[in-house]
Amino acid sequence: PLARARRPARPDARFARAERLAVLRESLEPPMDPLAPVIEAGDALLYRREGVSEQVFRQLRRGQFRVEAELDLHGLNLAQARGALSEFIGEALARGWRVVRIVHGKGLRSGQRGPVLRQLVNGALRRVAAVLAFASAREVDGGSGACLVLLGRPRKGRGPRPR
Image (cartoon, rainbow, N blue to C red; front, side, top):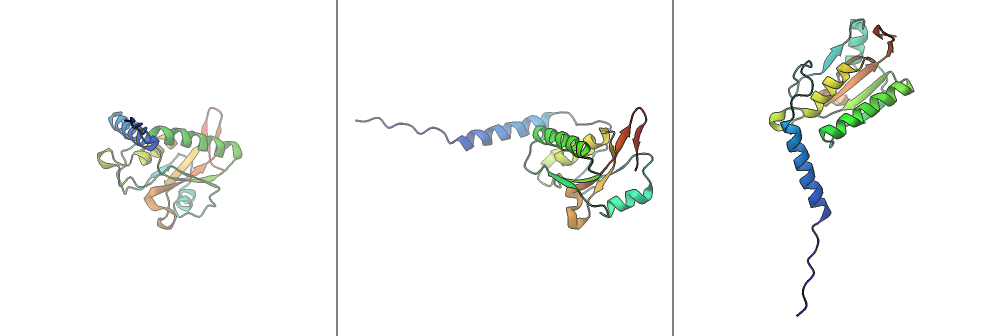
């Protein structure tokens, strides 16, 4: 009798296992930034550096600036999102973009870990000197699942300066 050749495992099953392991590793990592406030699902992201006027911050929160580019982090794990965010902010600064939107999702399916990508965005943007302010988008533009980021150019040795 002929021996039947065994079919190899489907490649997508291997990737699904790898993704589950990545999520498990991320869940065991310490919090991303101990200085950034803890963000719960549904909380608005709000941040304004000293020197950014209340009027400019209000305009940002109301979506009154033209968005020049967008980054969507949906479907990325923490490591991928961290790299994509860093690359995107670098490109935005190199191109001189003033306002960008980052879609991070609301974190409703993150379980006990909370909104992981929102926490990443919140902590990472606070550490970039050229980020003058950021705020959750208006409901029609993604609400608490996205944020608008106001960028400037950091002055050497003195921190950011609004334009």
